[in-house]
Amino acid sequence: HGPPIVPVKFILEDPEGLTSTEQSEWDLMGGEGENLLELAIEHGINIEHACGGVCACSTCHVYVEQGMDQVSESDDDEEDRVEEAPGLQVNSRLACQCKIEGKGPITVHVPAWNRNAVKEVPH
Ligand code: FES
Image: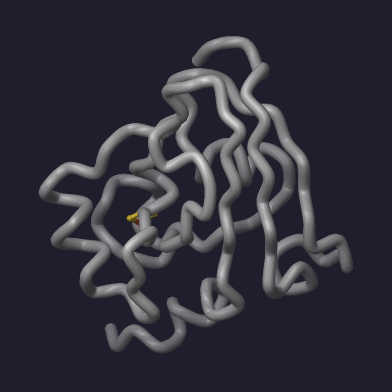
């Protein structure tokens, strides 16, 4: 992906669970073509990604609060999948399918249940 010049803020409802720190706001720099899941993981924000980022679960569900026009549009696969996620909103996205496309800024809200979603899904 491109050079890390796009400002992306992550707001975590459960910083302890995702990062083992108390820092709830993370100002990161992403690169064009990078997806939000990769960016978060690269910086130690462990957003759940049960399927490994191939749009086959909905555990990486996040809300894009700002800059929805700065990320790739969701395709049909993502839309079908995200509908299964708890807490669906109009700005719901799967972080692994959401690629940075513009110059930002982008704000991503990670709900507290992100960490628990896996356990609630029956296997
Ligand atoms: Fe499974 Fe994103 S990690 S859909």
